[in-house]
Amino acid sequence: MNKNIGFRRNIYLSWMDAAAAFSAETPDLAELRARLDPVVAQQIASPEGRRMAIDVLITIWGKGAARRPALHADASALFAQSSTVDDRIWLHYGMTLAAYDFFRLGVITIGQLSRYQETITPKEVKQRLVADLGQMGSLDNAADRILFTLRNWGILAETEKRHAYRPLRGQFVASDPALEEWLLAAALTAHPAGELPFADLVRLPELFPFRVTVGVDQLRRSERFDVFRQGSGWDAVSLRG
Image (cartoon, rainbow, N blue to C red; front, side):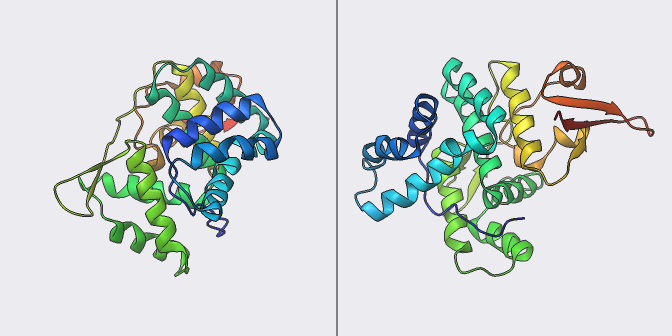
């Protein structure tokens, strides 16, 4: 894993919507930054604070076009067709997984904890991240940024207990199966393995907010994936090309 955390600001859902829309209209990162500045300024007055937040947005939606052109192009097309906030969250989440290793590790941690307990705390998340990454000076703040972002996106819910949040497992249901297929491609793009058993892919802990219902036959028909039967009788999935 790349230990450059990078994810250093709270990221509001409205900013992500703007970044996705603007990135579909221009590949010029300077223009994208200029268009995002007044959007981010609604929450952040400090020029330096805005710069850092826009850096994150550009890494996710701007630079994604060059780093992962097929994934970005499909995300932009699906974003333009999306009819609900929930549908857009599938895309923002997948693009962020692919852009930031630290975000991915953070949501893996939350997904794993939520399999065995109803609520999670920042302390629990940070302890696991330190165990995986070692003590890093910016880790605490970056973990807080992820937790705030997930709360703003409606993935973590507040509880009566202070600093305890309820992960909303399976909260997001796609209006189009293409969103499920795309998110699996984004998760596999971000995953360090070149291939995964189908059963493991659809149950990745980082996908905890989403209800994934696609079957292996749908992935076989997809242009995004190669699906092949292993000798032990289970299906493995890799990204085509």
